[in-house]
Length: 173
Image (cartoon, rainbow, N blue to C red; front, side):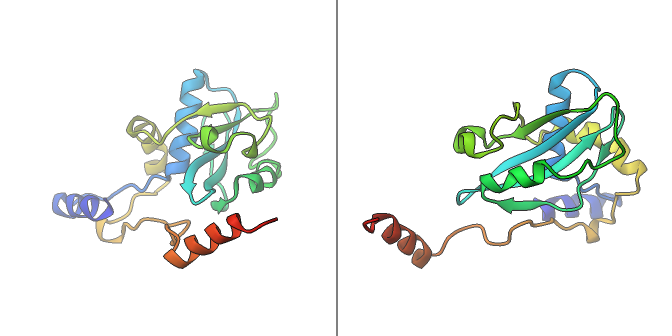
């Protein structure tokens, strides 16, 4: 997909605007709530292999605060991410806190138990809503410099890893 975008941007002589998929999830969830009230969002997407991609964002009513990092981890690990200090200056009243994404059915209560869950995906309309602020912040890049950001570069288990997991699961406890 990145190569197609690069080709189109290079051919048209226009820069490309990288948009973080997890930020688009947070934006889609914010939009679905129907207001601009301050919001803390832990955005999660199913990463398969019993893991989730996650990042925490804060909406102050006008703009998003970006995370210092993204993670791929077991769902249970997200509680620590979710309880980190606020991403921006305190907002009064305190912002709502939600989890947003597509991993709730797969991981159930392992994923941020007790948090309100808002199903959301990184839609094109969410990316279009984000684009003006990202452009104003100077995030556009020349087409030849556009590259995907990989949180995890390993996307599948080897045959040996799958066999070892299967053997461990079958072993008497």
